[in-house]
Image 1: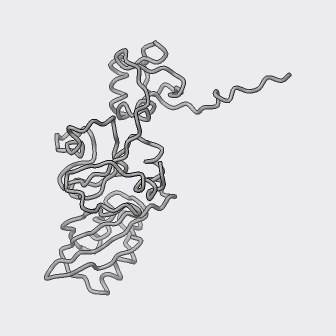
Image 2: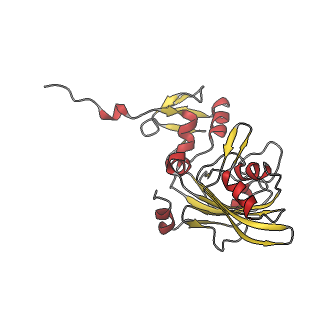
Image 3: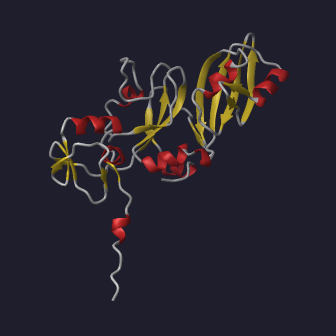
Length: 248
């Protein structure tokens, strides 16, 4: 009788650093540091290479002698204040979004996408990398809605030019939609919807027309609204909100 193949052997292997991140233990950068310090063991042997390919479902990983097991899946929304960077460790010593999570009993979580230092509003964080990657995948076209205050009062012609987009550094920047929310004096508020995430996309787009952005607030991701969540506060997503975002 022919021997049946061991289906478990087909499990794709990933780097040790990525495995520690997927298990919710730490970031890849932190994992690389732990491996370099000789604090990580795989199968009882000290690992010397953060790129070592392993199967996190089958290989026993320990850090400082303690076994690393998958943490519970966590899904958070944060109202990011202006002035914080979206990273865990900042070499310049600036405040980070993790300052808003102090005191919460959480496993390691990573931001799902980014908001630059000067931007504020809805930011998701999770330790579920598959879910996060699904939201960030350009093919998913998950809309992100922003309310943007600008230092001008655009007329219909200018709004039309905004909607046509602009080429900046050889890259065509556009938005799914741009609408005027309100205008008064020398400033106005726009609602801008993006279905892709390019670096500083809105600021660069408006800057191409010499329009200064005064405030930029992300108010929704897909059907998930920022709502009344206070600035600097974080909370868990509900089952209904996860369903709105496509489940987990």
